[in-house]
Length: 113
Image 1 (cartoon, rainbow, N blue to C red):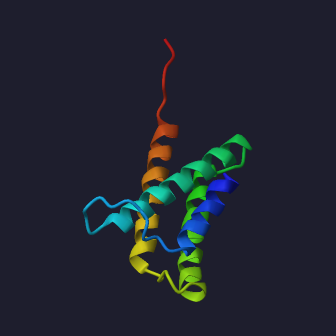
Image 2: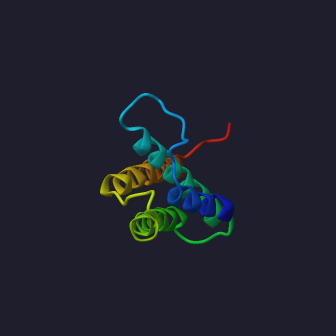
């Protein structure tokens, strides 16, 4: 988990011209959405395993704040990356999708037959 979080930080602060292309104008936003959906999911799993109260809420808030901090760092400390509100929106959408999925999954009652 810490490894993924740090890897996301490093990948967000270095030149990303070597990333695979899908042939769409929204490739970067797709990467952001997936990366932060996974970040939220991984943090949820860790928090849940440690029996922390409200793991979805904490993972949700922490993932969004982390994404905003990285966008600020891109503007302050790199010459190869620019901060973007739309990147933060894509990050947040990924986090929201996973949080919604986890909330629905946790509220679903499954009967054992």
